[in-house]
Length: 220
Image (tube, rainbow, N blue to C red; front, side, top):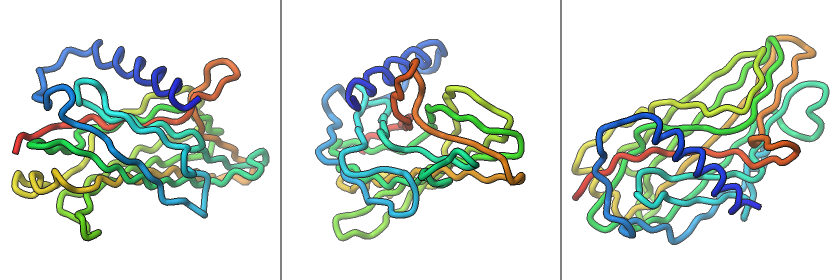
């Protein structure tokens, strides 16, 4: 399911990107960037991800990384059941891009969100690079997106990332592991307030929640 879902999401992202003319980006040549391993840190406090429930792929032109979460969901209110009001997932991506390094310029979230009046949701994404010794490197980034009810829709939420970097520190990332943490938190100011976040809906089919990282490349 998760691979077919990725194809569906990628086609939507490509159609959105093609609708907005932008200056040509300088990306690594096709085949330069590869992903060799993906693993997740299991979250015991929330409904984020489990091993095998996250698919990661880089687009053919190396302009974006798409992460598709098969079990990223959060809910609050009388009908939440066993689903937590908080979801968190930490994904470790081992990549190779000889001669090139990247930063995250913007982030897009795609999923289904339903919020009653008095209910808020906060989506947070943080990323960093970790060297071969397990030490955090310079150049961490983050973004946050908030919505308030009443609201209901399949959404594509866009947000510029906030990064702090220099060319020298960026080029040292070429052999580093990229780690992304995504979290969603629901809160209510009324006792009966309900809300849910989950994957996009296609009829009765849940296609999974996705995050798209739009990349800015530098040649080292």
